[in-house]
Image (cartoon, rainbow, N blue to C red; front, side, top):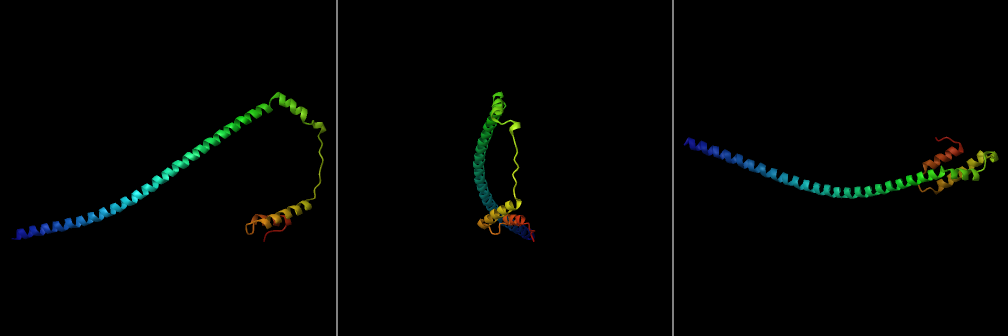
Length: 152
């Protein structure tokens, strides 16, 4: 009988081990299903982002092509303008219309720096008064500079 008892004990141990394995596999399946659900959600978000990115890239590509076309047209226009300005006829026209160097004269106009400073200070104070931002540190700095005071 002892052989049958040992056989029953071995089979019972085998059943317990397999039951434990079934439980572990069940937990593993639940975890994998949760991972699958999370991965599918992430995939959906990534696909949405990809679609938005493709739209954005195509828009930016079209904008770039338009800017490139505009720049090319501007370069052509500049080249044509330079060609016209370098033409001998343009040189003759410039010589006729521009006054000669002998007729040029310079007149020195005097300015009073304190009057200019007072005018600038008035303009800056008015701008600071109209400023919507509190303090307007840039304008405050200009007032200090124009009044000749140092910041404390």
